[in-house]
Length: 539
Ligand code: ATP
Ligand code: MG
Image (cartoon, rainbow, N blue to C red; front, side, top):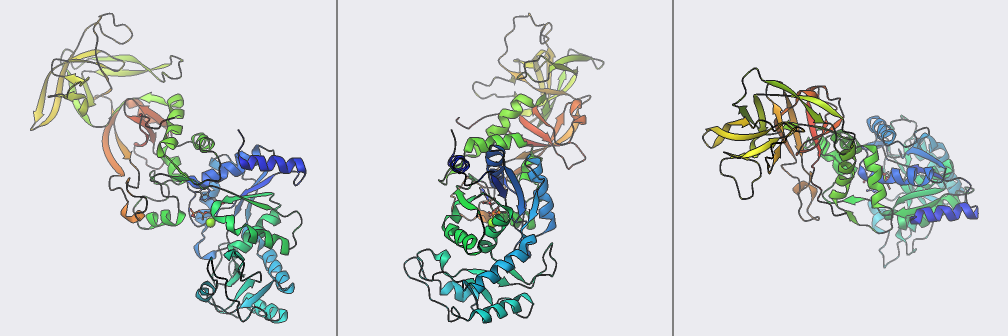
């Protein structure tokens, strides 16, 4: 089924309103991209430009010098590339500052803009309300020549910050507040990350954005619903600035996900305050964080397809995003064994020289029967929770005198244990002969299969167990009071030798534990929990 944007584009191509679809993704380089931006990139690139054989521009909306930074430009390009979108046209709104200035002068000359001396506060106070019209400025009918001169003074650095503004002259009693003589240029003596000190006036978003779109020949300018009320202004700007074949703006519902912070501004706060380990902390909903966590471009694109595009704001369950990566890794990830909370297990009916190679299935979902070798000895580690002195009802794993299968190996029977206080320090077990996996005709039935690692050749790894950054409490509570104190738990785990050579960024299924991705930054073996095995999402 097509979405409403696709329907509009199909109609526009049919009617000849445009010959080729041109879309853009216009991030402000004031932070790293997050999962909300992924929705926008997928829609503008995969969902429109690719689908209709058109073009896609990555355009930096760098019109606010105070918050912009080259680090953000680089990270955004990396992230957009990583998602597989076209980055052959990387453009900067600041490259159109001359054109924007020209448009502003044109508006003044047409009597459609004037220089005013109101402060931001005065503009706000005289703007009126939804029920009352705004108040016209005493400068509204300033002679064109005077406005031209003052605007030039603003440009030439003769005016201090905030002393003068340029306003579009539209309608102070418009029912749409955005049309009540909006500010289109302000004075700001601030160095720009690309333009240096060339400019000390900067265009406002509502003025700059339509011009950027028009200059690039964007046909469909897709933005989020908050801008719906700005559309009449968008149309006014492209019309009054006399662009031919002007772009059109369309709005869709922004992505929000339960317990997920979707604001660059707030994410920046987390980074700056040290609450997380940088923009690419695997708990962050940034593209960099998701990538480091173990998400793949295909899983994110799949997620965007599943959520679809609509005009109604709603909140997506966290489980949907997780199920996209889980379903993918279930098919692609190699299986491996790691014990996250280890307790030693000694096989009492094998001696110290015992070592045997066993076949371990790399990925049962792949169905190709491929195996690799693992080695067992008489000293192993098993998961502490897989042995109980006083088991709860229906416990299916190891108890004294009980049996369980060691994954890919033998059935064992627990014959003893040692403790230090309440804590089990050692489990003693014996292999039941004739029960080797794949060759077992003993007829013995076990209720459980547990994973293990060989204590004699395993490696120490750090497992980072992640939970949501936000607690599951009232949405209206401020983020700072919703931070989850247990969003990261670091475990000292034991993993099979094979994982010593795990490439950075590669994900594995740790049997019975979840999917883990070898951290791409740490030199020592650190594995990030991508997602648990259990799917709580109702499909
Ligand atoms: P933030 O509040 O996180 O800074 P923003 O809208 O200010 O978001 P921009 O850099 O201006 O960030 O966004 C670039 C593009 O991404 C815009 O077209 C915007 O509509 C889109 N976008 C931002 N957040 C979302 C979201 N949650 N869902 C869908 N699209 C989004
Ligand atoms: Mg923005």
